[in-house]
Length: 542
Image (cartoon, rainbow, N blue to C red; front, side, top):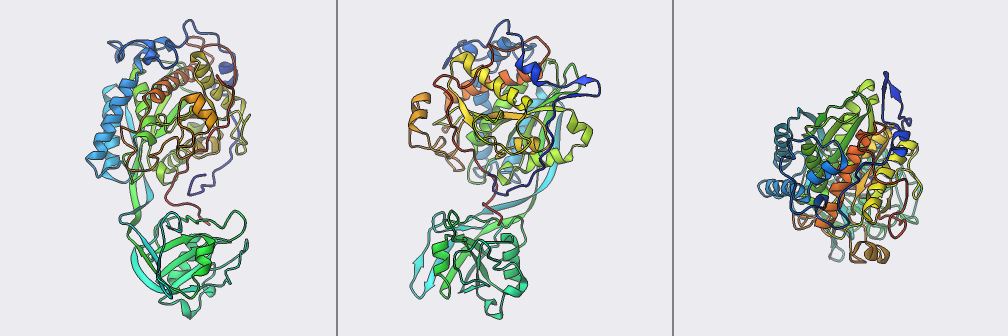
């Protein structure tokens, strides 16, 4: 689940004719005629099955069928873009986070490449709440017995915490700190007695948001806040809170239930050094016109990294793949328009894609026939995860699954089946940028190669990876650089992206239709995918 827990609209499912122009239809995907030539090459082969890079002249030719496009979209081309993003990060403090110079430079690179390919690029600015810890935090018991606690195990700094180094007595606020699902601790100004002034407020999770509890504590004169988990089953571990937005100026941490409940009356120290403010960032979009003006296929992935690292797998791999596909379709007119999108502030809570969808008037939103999302395609210990947009393995939010979204999933499965490449479902639960589109009733789907989840023994056999290890051991870390990429995964998935973009934009049009017939599971049978990856500064809001 996304850390900011956005409450999206559950829109209607639609994939219909609008304004006299046929949108993509589920039937168009499901009953597509076989291609004259399916995807070239075999599993693990070079791009397009051919030696070296793309054939000469790819940037000038029309790539309206699968074979031509897949010979031009190469892992070498994607890797060149990844290296450019790595260079950007190295020149800008080691990251490409939204609101930073590294993100602006990343956006400039994408803009330059698309403009050179002949696209008109639209840069959409929006404001967003930015939070970054700039020095290690401290949380310690000073008295009666000194003890130092470990970030990420015993406590977590709340996103949008204020910055200060404070010491005071931990004063319980309207709670006896017994396990509770109904605690209102800190939700009302009247909860705070005069004893809190100049001390550290000890509040318990429950009823209202963490932001409200912290703001009330600050208004009562507290110098810091410790938020204790509920203590009930499943909610007694480490609490990783977010205050939702900048504003609170005192330091705030969340703890495990056991630690927090033990601190009442003790003297504690909290030290946080962080940036908490509103910044500007941007989305970039560029549209390839189609023979119809309706049924737009939006192809998106986030361009930003976390502040902790360069974000080459997450999500340079998705952005670079989309950029490579866009370059090689620049001279092609497909049945429906293709709008390539590079989202900002995904790592702060899927904010760019949501801002984009929110900005579209109803008639423009209605022109969108499908959304394809690509977030992490080159995980070093990869699995090939397809979002379960037909709902046959995992339960999805209301309105997310339709015949049309099922057809999108089938398109990816057809590609993998045609090459004998293993794949499996992963949850289609709104933990990446497809959420805003699915909430608006737009059929969605996409690919993912794994994040912090751990590879199973079965998956290790299937994909040749290492069981018991994360799919991406450098997820959200400084080591997510150009060495943190599986070339095999990137090669397979960049071809899968190119294939799906072409097939979806040609849906119902005849030419370029895909390999084989419907089929599920892939070699080795269907599997249960690893967890998606969550985004946003901090964790839960309440």
